[in-house]
Each structure stands twice: as C-alpha cells, then as structure tokens.
Image 1: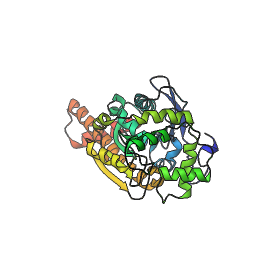
Image 2: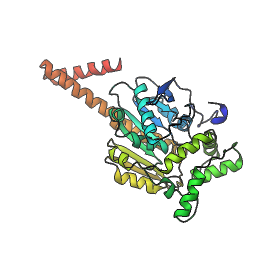
Image 3: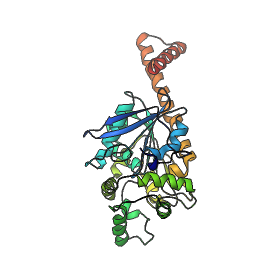
Image 4: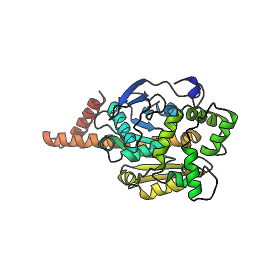
Length: 339
C-alpha cells in the first residue's frame, strides 16, 4: 500500500502489523490479512466497507492492539487483496470464513465488527459454520440489510423512482475519482461524513476511498444495489450492537432502526448526533469503547465459562467434587489453551 492511499502519520495512519498473511477463499481468491497485538490476547476481527481498506480501522487498531489481538483484512479487490470477477454476497461470506479459519484456533471466540459493507459481510456469513464457531459478539456500524439505493439520501431529493434511479447511477458510476483535491474532499464529506468532521478525518477517508480501483468500486456497487440480507439478520443470533450516525446519507438511520428491530439478540443501539457514514473515523473512541465492552462482556466471559464447564466435565469423570479441585483443573485448562 503506497503512501498516497492512506495517511502516513498521525491518528489516522495505519499501524505496522505484527504479522501479515494471505487467506485463501473458497474460490481461490487471495485476501490480505493483518494481525496486530499480542498473540495470546482476546481476538477482534474487523471488516471494512465498500471502497475502503484495513487503513480505515487505523484508530481502532492502534488502541485495541495494546491488549487485544486485532485481525483486519482487505475485502477482495480492496487494499492489497487482488480483484476478482466473483463479487457477490456469497463471496463476502466465503472471504470472512477464510479469514477466521486462517487466524483463529478451532473453537476460539472473537468479537467481529463490520462497517457498512463489512457489516453486511457479517450478516451474509451469520449462518455459516465458521461464523457460528468463532463469533462471540458482533458490532454493526453504519450499515443496512436491504433497500440501500432506495433509502440513500446522497441526492437531496424526495424519495421515489427518479431519486432511486439517479442514486444508483451516481453510486455505480465507472468514472475515476481522480486525485484528492479540495473539491473531491468537499464531495466526499458531503456524501459520507457529518458537517463537523475535521479536515484530518476527511483527508484520511478521501485517500482511502480514492485508492479503490474504479472497476472494483463499480462491481461491488452492483452487488449492493440489489442487496437483501434480511434473512441473514435473523440468523445473527450472537449478541449484537448497532451504531449509526444521525446524518448518514449512505445508510440513513432507518436502516439501523430496522436492524435493531429484527436482530434476535440486540444488546445496544447508539445513534450519534451530527455524524455521518464513516463512524469508526468520525467517532473513533466511541467505536473502540464499544468493541472493548463486547470483548469484556461476551468473549472473555464466554471463554471463562467454557473453561469452567470443561473443568467440571473433567472433574466429574475423575470423581472430583471439591470446588478447589475443580478450580485447579480450570486453571490447568487455561494454561494449556494459552500454551
């Protein structure tokens, strides 16, 4: 990734990963994966959105990597993942499963966070075996499950067929975005960010979005235009939190409210006043804090409960009934799992 595709320094410059690897999806597509932080720490998996890359999560990675193992990957065709002719909802789910298989131990739990198309990735994979094996909880940021073009407010007109048709043409345009100019920054800020977004936030997002190849941008726009993941939302049974910006034009808050109503296990909904579509960049501390809460509440506690249950089974088999003996077994299980 060149210096032109992301900020080179400051809060929005992506950290250097502890290691990098290639995950191979079901159709052979190669996915660039980064792992940050201690190998024995609780795991977090980050899935970015349309036209973005791992650099989009720079603020979250920098903070979380101090005491979490943070796994971030480039969606196919984005960042350092090669483009593929197979752009589909099924491909998104395949790719996430491939990343989980390549980075997590069997049965290991992680909190999965997705922004925009990354959130749709979680919905698409919700019924998949590897998702259910590894997901302890999920965070959906600025995303929706269906009617993305119809509900978009990028064009400030009354809802209807004309707005839908023209919005589809704008979002699906094959035109190159060109260099990041003052005009380009203003357009991107209007379409994707809140009015109070700082110049540094706008610059960071503009560099990332403009780096996305136009053929990739167009290919995925056609997938999103006909998206229908309502069934995937109903299958997303892990504890799931939702975050949305109140002035999001790409995925207005009507989507977040629909998700909250449909999710089987929604554990919180946050609407951020004055913020747009790029919530992890516009509200980095809040998004990071929510991920931390999910890890502490569901990933860490779930792992402890599973170790205690395993220790109880071992103790029952060995005929040990004393709490001290069971606790000793649980401690041994924890040490072996961390080895």
